[in-house]
Length: 263
Length: 91
Image (spheres, helix red, strand yellow):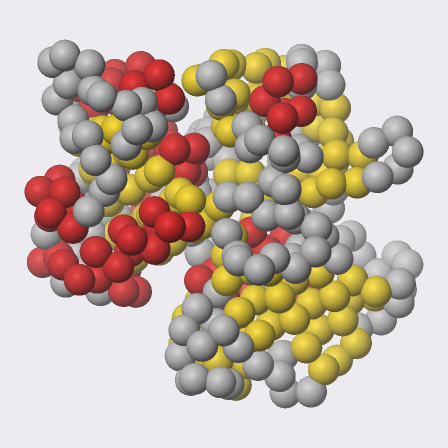
C-alpha cells in the first residue's frame, strides 16, 4: 500500500473522535511501596469496558509535554476512573503520578482506548486472567465488573494468577483476598518471584511457567477467554506456555507494558 | 517514550489512542497481515516502537514495519506498505 498523507480536518468538521479532557484527582490510595491508585473525576466520561486504557498527557510550565498510557482499574459501573500506576525509576511521568499527584491536581486524559484487550460479562467465560505486577490493573477492572454484575457475573467462572515480587508488592492484596473468599468469587492464586514467601504461604514462589498454568488455570478444553498483562518478557513466556498447553492463540489476548525511552 | 528503542517493551494496545486518530474503527482489533511474512495478527499484538512523534508497529515474527504513523506539522502521515491487508472486525 502506498503512503498517504491526511490533511488536518477542516475546523468545525465535527468533534474529534477522542478528545483530550481535563480531569481532577479526587483521591490517592497507596497500594504498595511502588504503586498508587489515583481516583479521577472525569466530567462527561462516555463509559468504558473493563480492560480498556486511557492516555494521560502532562504539560510542564515550559510547555514540554509527556504522554503515557495507563489501564483503567475501575469497573464500568463506577463513575470515577481509577488508575493504578507503578513507579518506573527514571520515568518522566510515573514518579509524578505515584508520588506527587494530590487531590485537586489536574491533568489531561483521553479515552477510553482499545477494544482488543477488553471484556464484558456479556462475552461470557470462563475467564483466565494472568498478571505480572501492575499488569493486574486492567484485570482487576474485569474482576470488579464481574462482581458488580450479580448473577450474570457469578455465572462466569474466573481465575486470576498474579505474579508479584513480594507480599508487600501485591497490588489490591486485601480486595483480592475478599473477592477470592466470597461465595462465587474468582479463584485467586499468587506467586512471588523475588522474596522468600512468609510462613504459611499458600501460593507459589517462582516465575509463572507451564506446569503452574496447567495446575491453576482452566484446561484448554474449557476454552477460557485468556487475558495476560505484564512486563513484556513475562507476557511472552506466559502466552507461549498457554499455547503450548493447547490453548487457541486467538483466545489468548495480551497486553505488554514497561519502560520505553526512560519510562 | 522518546525516540525509537532498540527493544520494544510495548505493543499495539498502547498505540490505540494514536490509531484512533487515524482510523475510523478500533484498529487494535483489526487483523493485519504482514507483507513480509504473511503472519496475521490483531494490530494490538504488533510490537510498538516510539510513540511521542508517531509510532512504528512491527511484526513480532519477522520485524517488518507493518504500520508507520508520524505526526508532522501538516497532519498525520500514515505508511501501510508493510501491511498486505488490514481487516476491521465488525462489532
